Length: 302
Image (cartoon, rainbow, N blue to C red):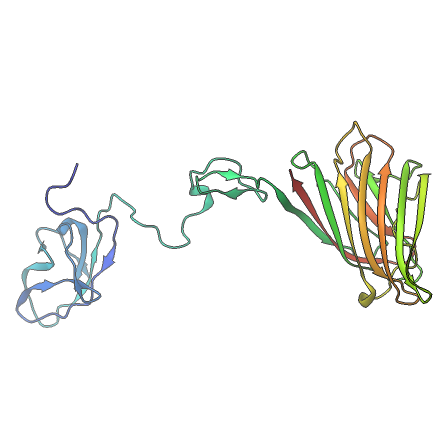
């Protein structure tokens, strides 16, 4: 129901402007920012006079924006502060950056893959890419990721950026991992098409493939670039890697500079691992030198 009389101030804590004491005067006007303010009552105030808190109702009273002390103040008295509490049973409006997510009444699961919707529920994106992880290779001839495939996503894309080797005669391959280990057996089947150009033609395509090989899929036709300005970029699509009813398959595209003559090369890769076990990750490796690259993995929401 509506209030009879003045509606309470809700949680508006204010410190009044400084008040200069006038000799022989008991009543003073309270202001905040040079604007008159009216407390709910004397009990909604903290008043300090000469360093001593005053008792509401007996040491002072209020009427509107006027505070009246029980006796006239004299020269030398100091009104230290007057603080108006508002309605102390209500917190009022929180200050900026003071409400944490833990204090919200939102429903759903709060984690790195969800967002807070307008209806105050945490939800996953209904489609598109979700970034899962990123890492860089350092001082090794391979770069792997493992343990990021979950039932939350059916398909994945991994990008290898700034890909090159410390050796000018290295060939790059990709293998799948099961149970957190590279698979090096005769279950790989792949076809890789290499697009290039030469002095005698605008371009040509050569195909290379393997059946029941143990090296993984070869993804470079010629030596990989051995400096950052010859670095390549690789994108791999991984389809339903957790399935135990079908083989793990992936397709990919790699563009890079051949280290021997700085020719531009494009590779298109199609690979399957002819074993129906769940795939836990993949490894990109070179057969000589150390690899330099940063990979970023995305889950694809269907």
